[in-house]
Length: 172
Ligand code: AMP
Image (cartoon, rainbow, N blue to C red; front, side):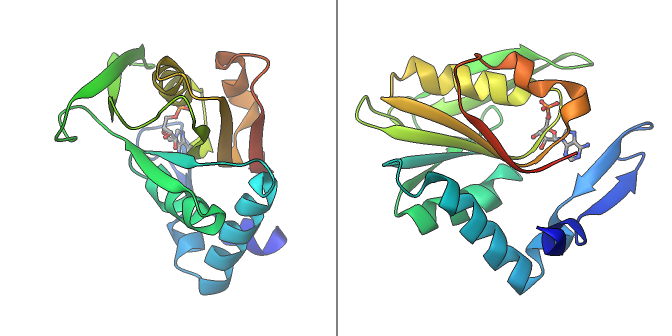
């Protein structure tokens, strides 16, 4: 994990003052780091029968696709409003300033599915809580939640039900 940690770039005051942004592009561009991420994420779910990985737009698409590929599962995008072409369901949630909405295709998940929802970074947890609500409304058998990085001081886990398995590769 040190190999990955060394390649995470901290960008101060992005996208606004006071935020230290964990930039993973410097991890993804390194072939060995990308390989390690795919392997380490997939090891967590190897024996869990996962059928779909949901990636949250947009940085969650990268790790989510790799994880789906490694597990032999399908990939499903959770997107910003107006991007998905077919019939969607949506959840609007509160952010620090204003609200945001995420959408999924109504037929993306079925009751037979075992799902991992993936995003790159867990910060305040609002985005993942909204994605969780969307996926849950489609009644899959089981939902796991996964991040590459968790910023534990922001308490994001508290926005998710206590019985959900939340796993992060790296915790700060
Ligand atoms: P959250 O506050 O958990 O709802 O995070 C909102 C989105 O912004 C998530 O998709 C995170 O990937 C991203 N994000 C929030 N804070 C950071 C940060 N410090 N570094 C990198 N990404 C972040």
